[in-house]
Length: 162
Length: 103
Image (cartoon, rainbow over the protein chains, first blue to last red):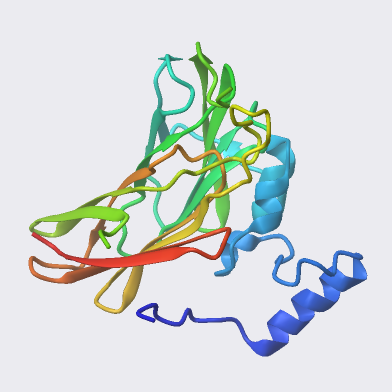
């Protein structure tokens, strides 16, 4: 009731998306936008379903990232509780449009993706789950290119419950 | 009903720092309960912060975000007293919205 309508893509875009998905025989996902999801407003459903980090990056951005020392990823060396691992990233890059986190060893690699509009500082802190000791990757999209930073996090108790 | 969202926006001149804590189970759909049955996935997918009619931060989340999620970010262009609007939607169609004044 109090939610504001989202700026939604044109009807044509939706139809195109639905058509291309239908062609792939995945008619049950009319809103799964084809690749480059970060460029539009839809929830990147497909990217969140990819198991490997490489596939998730591809599904989200449609390109690969290059390591950069301008992306600073802050995570603990050892996480005692994989269910709650504080992670933050900051960058000195300009024209940042999105920041995403990938946990390589999780059942689904993509953990979170943040859109950074103009005027928002390209830095974010959050808490993620990690199934076991893993490589953590942060990707910063700046001026249309992808830059990454990675870090190994040792997990002593996994975050998958049970 | 009390809001599931706790948020604090603090202005320090030019920059507003926002911290939010949301109550949500963030179930992955991969964990079994005590009877050995899978707990269905239930997690926040989209979280949006708006200020003065403009999106200032949008999060797309998967199941790997911790239970009772926390997030922190900063943005420019707001001042003390401006209203910050926060809303989330989850994979089961649940949602919540709240507003907070920037202090």
